[in-house]
Image (cartoon, rainbow, N blue to C red; front, side, top):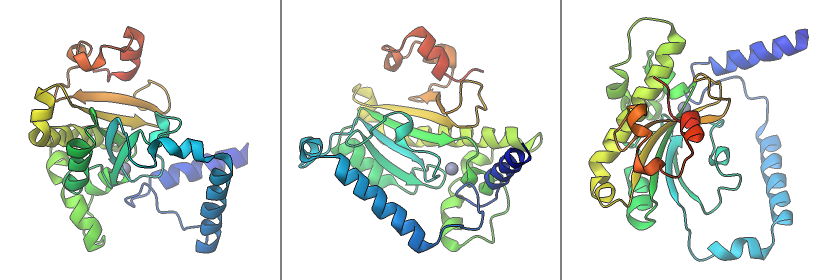
Length: 249
Ligand SMILES: [Zn+2]
């Protein structure tokens, strides 16, 4: 029991860390140990997949989603596709920002023609947390990337419980990034070839919709859940699925 409690406290301490990646506990794993995990993990992958698995995409990729998400290790496309290989074109940086990744996103839209651009923030985002505090002592590289969060986060409430302001920051950032994407990719949206979807991956159940839920906040700039329900992009979702996935205001 005590052990469990200590483990839970340690988890909270790590998640509450100020470092950008969502925690900065001292690395317990050495480089040699980490490389062993990587190489052995890949060996298992090689053993369990034959040529026929790779054949369909040896010459080209066929993603249906371009996703810009945070680099956070707790967020991966496996939370919506058990096997995301050849399905998701992934661009990642701290705070899931377009400003740092325009070329890669353009590639997904202009060349791979994915019908969805998913901008996926997440609860307990270390980048958003850092940007809501003084990050002047971070490296130049980190500062340069966090600086782009200034605009969306400048509108976050200045008082109230931090946990609430933190989630507000995550949402404001997602909505801002969607707006940016609309500026760049409007012609594709107008032709019905693309939808920009802004969402938050919620692994702490902040929205009460289940641990690990992707909560949709924004589709093509629309943020009103009662209007989003009728978005043509949602037309194949059942009403219970819409209820499960749409943010409740
Ligand atoms: Zn993050």
